[in-house]
Length: 453
Ligand SMILES: [Zn+2]
Image 1 (tube, rainbow, N blue to C red):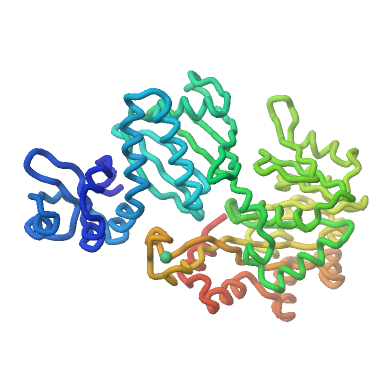
Image 2: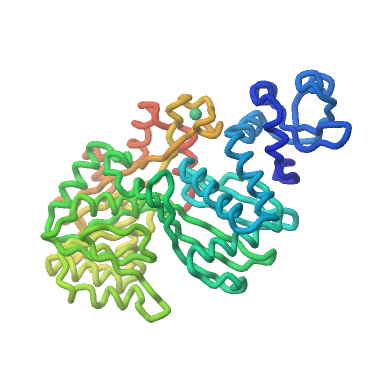
């Protein structure tokens, strides 16, 4: 934690100075008393006093240039939130609704996927997750937390007095004239509660495979496998590698009024047209296995079963495939060859595997170099040099030869050797192509590929 976490940034005070001077000289005014303005800065007190035309004292800090630039970015929005946070403590609901609406709008405009509301001994602090990275944005008065928590629960039509049990809900707000869905989760903690709002931005699931970053080669293989009337298509990778988004992109290709498509989801995040989405509900015993067992009676053409969690799920997927259904699923594995091992670990008989498995897509998400500053750091990328993410992937299409290997129980190292000899594009090579095309960096790819499952 850095020194900035010890203060509530007073954006009213910050805004009272010329922002160009603050940004150019890396100065953040923190608070003032009758004599001095106290600041974070790398400059000497005398120099800052001259620049700001007021007596200044400096405070200890461990901020680097990027931190200064980040906290001094978008001062106007932050000042509005700061002022509303103060008035929300004294006024009735108008200010707090305005505060939350401004916060949601700001987050939505900043490509935030999750807003985290937490409390510690001192403050109520807000962090945003952007492109998979969690970043601290604000500290507010601790008293504001309970008010925010109550209002969010009201939006979800939940019991606002319930602080001791986890709650889940959702609500919709019109932001920039668009309906945006939010999914709410609260969890009791030792300091009170932890709240998370997920922003369900429809733009995320309307991206096609190319826009998600699949190479022409992978894209063609996936499209080819989606024309099959039966078989299993697996999308694999660790948690947070964008598997579900890829599956949605595939559903967008498949969806048609002339096909019955059923999904099992936990929970349903995005509502899709023409697709029967079934949400797991353990409370009423509508479990993953219960839905799986009954899904084929719905006369589907295509089923998306989410993660293959165990042997039973794999068996149902293979049976469904054998009886003429296309099955889309995910698996928690590192690579296409690892996937074959994992399926064998789940006791998949080799003849069934050879007959049903059609395609394995293995993927990760890498941060893209910011296109505005080309990796130098700017306001658009929050001075992090990266903005947005795309997939690096490898796609194994099970042709007759590979199906034969599966049938004859060849192990994955044998298959890997074969793939090498055939010029298969492994994920590392796909990543290298992206580095060569200046889309990402070697450091980022290295980071992502070295993460353990
Ligand atoms: Zn940038």
